[in-house]
Amino acid sequence: MQIDGEHLRLSDIFGVAFENEPCSIEETAAGLLDERRRSLEIISKEKTIYGVNTGFGILADHRISPDDVNALQKNIVLSHAAGVGEPVQRELVRAIMLVRANSLLKGYSGVRKCVVQRILDLLNNGITPMVPEKGSVGASGDLAPLAHIAMTLIGEGECFFDGKVVSSSQALERAKLQPLVLKSKEGLSLLNGTAFMAGIGACATHTATQLFEQAILVAAMSVDALMGSTSPFDARVQQARRHPGQSYVARRLRETLEGSEIRTSHLDCDRVQDAYTLRTIPQVYGAVKDTIDYVGSVLNIEVNSATDNPLIFENGDAISGGNFHGEPVALAVDFLSIALTDMGNMIERRIDRLVNPKLNDLPAFLTNGEEGLNSGYMLWQYTAAALASENKTLAHPASADSIPTSGFQEDHVSMGAWGARKLWKIVDNVATLISIEALLAFRALSFRHPKRSSAVIEGLFKDIEEIVPDHKEDRYFGKEFSDVRRLLFRKAGLSNL
Image 1: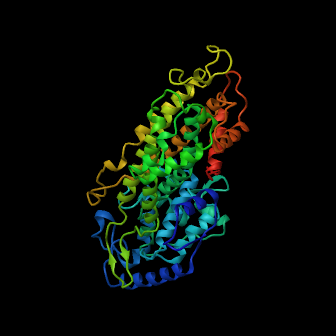
Image 2: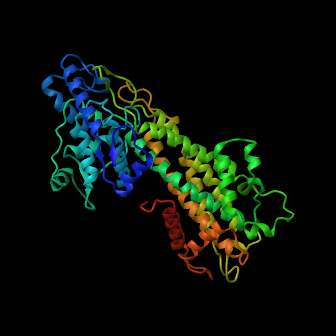
Image 3: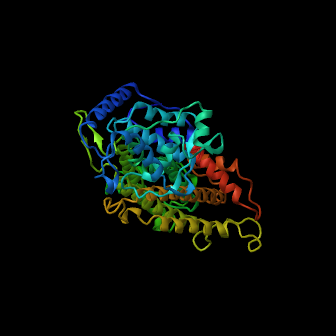
């Protein structure tokens, strides 16, 4: 894959991050880098430019002598590597690196081509900087985590290489790569920007997008297993409201349930209306889809944007602005966290409806064998409740907070880094909730046989049947839930997660 600063997609980021796809620089973009670098070197001899020949943050009024310009860039990398906590997942660091490289390729940062190329060299050689998860407030970019990435570029700090934690200098030597010697502005440009929150947000949003189709399929299986009506999915109902996501989800439910014998068997039953967790799937899941699509559009803009400061323009102007502020991403990832949390709330309630004997005509807790002696899947609703509750706490918007930094120079911050990290946790929890619902809906549907569901749902039933053993009495059920989760990820094109 080639990157040019303009056309990076979320799926591309996921491919490089999780599938180790190689990447290179598009030739035209490389030429632009050389041109802007020459402009920066010329104007920096004549003008005072923030971060090039000045200090940083509140120290911006301190002029740096020409002899110390390169040392300034190394110093900012080392001093700003103030992250703490557990290392960020290796694949997510790869996503962050790619986003930063793509942003630098736009040319507004004034860095040399070799800086961008070295980031790609690390990616292509499997060298992943060790980045502590905590430390960014998402204001002047994701300074602390990006500094830890920059440290590996200059041969400092530690990284993951060949499955081990080694010094960055050792990894570079083994890969036959020289540590970068940073020149004016390059240290600052590696640190400024929203790559941390945008990279993690991109992977989370892509994952949510891919899993969403499986979530609709699983919800449809639950509808049939619980003898739900398809009337609420009628196209005319959706057209009366016109939200695109709602119409899309209703159509997918109709298509998925088409031809179900189970549905036909209770067309004339006395039930007037289903519970909301069955009846309003289009309204709730549709709103989630619209949110996913919106957040995807925000991130697609962000990962192809210049988020450095100052920016170097084609006429040589160096303008200090605020493109490094993470608010656009922070608000978006918080929005998606809220949407997915509510989707998880609905899934948990359907899980309860599948196992709760007060809410269905199925064996209590989907047990086989003697009731009382066997508890069946009772406790998996507890697990679902725990996950849903955890998400509710995680969904509190990080962007609602702001703590001034840098001696009140950076007096409003986005907290987008924490927002993106929380989103990644929520996506993982929702994936597990979908998996729990899938297995329980599968077990519930088995009690409806020999009446058959639709061809699509029976296809999923068969897929699950092939990987989980028959249920005759209580046993440890954890492995079958894990196996179903892997199945859904594979069907979603996310096998490497």
